[in-house]
Structures are given as structure tokens and as C-alpha cells.
Length: 317
Image 1 (tube, helix red, strand yellow):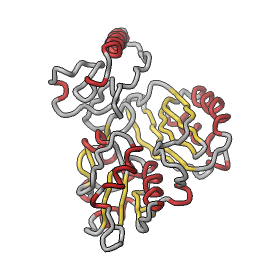
Image 2: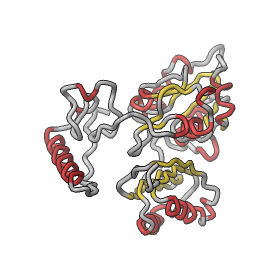
Image 3: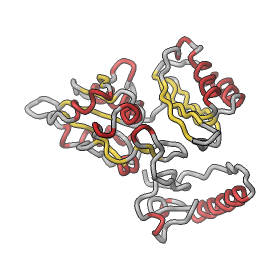
Image 4: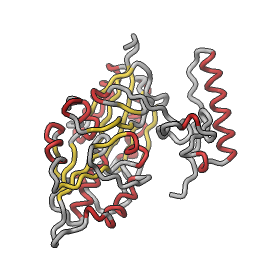
């Protein structure tokens, strides 16, 4: 590890924050004062974030948040890197801290049963348990738990529709199956298990702390995890012990490059990959080329270039 060590802290909490809009400015100012980068989402239903910076500065932000009685028991997960995981600091106001689009789903009241990483293997090895990966298709593609169902969704808001038609989740002799759900850090499963309970599934479980806590605490030789876990920062993916993985990121769609992607004629560094090439306009590609050119110039001058954020690729979803 280099002389410069960056601490990444991931955290979320479902809690009623009626004044969430007023929290944005002072929270952003405190993070910037401590040179912390990353993204914090605030909504009426709570907070969701991943931030990074010098360890003392990240812990200062966490202490600032926990000084509020509503967030006093905020839990976080830590990992370290020798390069900056983020280049900007943003605090955004949202309708939901994780978007499912289903009204009246309350994770604080209806979430499923937490299962600790040490007990997860036994649960998902039970042949009577349906194991569901609640993440997006490109996340599942690079790693998942052995035997887990892949809903093949492009966004979390598509999960309820998949649940309705999934054969593995249909009732047998009038009884709905036991279901175990997992996601990266646990937040999506708070909502997905609450949704499942609202749909009449009585035995619903989810991995406490998500895949990241599992990879952090379960030894590789005991693990049922296969591949790497996609993370939404410059590390791209992590493996056991939360060691940064081998995957690269497409700078246009912010998704991991598929095997052989760089050999494709649809791949252009910083501009497109086979996954997103058809979903961006010529104007967007030209903007991306200019951004890539500026980044390469800055790198040659040993400067940090952040650049304008690219528009999201146009999709049909």
C-alpha cells in the first residue's frame, strides 16, 4: 500500500428524515471541509452513501452524522485503497434512497430476517430455500453466490415485476417458498424483503451487511461466492478480504467491461463498449472523446482531471 491510503466507508439507514432537504447544504460543506469525496443520497426514508478520503477525515464525517440522535446507531463498512475511489463530493436529494417505485413499502417495519454471514452458507444450501440475487444483470455477470437465481434486470425497480412471474417463487400446494435475498451492501434487500413480505411470503431472509460483509468476514476456503463483487467506485470490483479485483470500467456507461470487450470494434477507450455503444448518440460519443482527450492531457502533465460528467446512455428501459 502506498504512503497515501484512502479509507472507503459505505453506509445506509432507513429512518424517517422529514427535514432531509435542509440537511444537504451543511452536510456537503462538512464533507468538503474535510476533503472527503463520494456520494450521499438523502430522502424522507433515510440516507445511503459511499464516501472516501483520509481515514481521520472519513471518521470525522461519520462522527458528524452520528451526532444526530436519528443516526446515532449508523453502521458502516470499511475498505482501503491506495488510489482515490472518487473524484467529486455530491449530496443528492431523492424520493427514495434506493428506487423500487412501489409505494407503502417500509423496510423499518417489514424487512425480512437478517442472516449473519457466518450462517449464510447453511441457509442457501438448504434445497427448500429459493436464493435470489437482487442486483442488476451487469453486477451478477461478474460474480454471485453458487445456485442463486439471476432475475436479469437492468434496474432494481424491475424486480417486483420479475417476482410476480418467476416460476421458482410460485406457491406449491398453497404455500409460498422460503426466500433468501442478497445484494452488495444490504440496502436493496431491506426493500426487496419488505416487498416480499407484503406479497405474502412469510419466510424471507437477507444477508446482513450484504456481499461486502460476507467477503470481508468469510474465509475463501469456506466461501460459496463465485467471482468478484461489483462496487460503484473506482475499484470497480472486489474479492475476498475486499481486495480490489481485476475488472475494468467503461467510462461511458460506468459498467464493468465484459471479457474480450477491449478487442471489439465497438470499444473505444473512454467513449463506448459493446454493452453501451448502441445506446449513446454521436453527440455523446464526441463529448466523451473530448473528455478522454482532456484526461490524457492532464495525466501527461501529472494533474488530476475530473471533467464534466457524461450524460447517461440512452436506453429503452
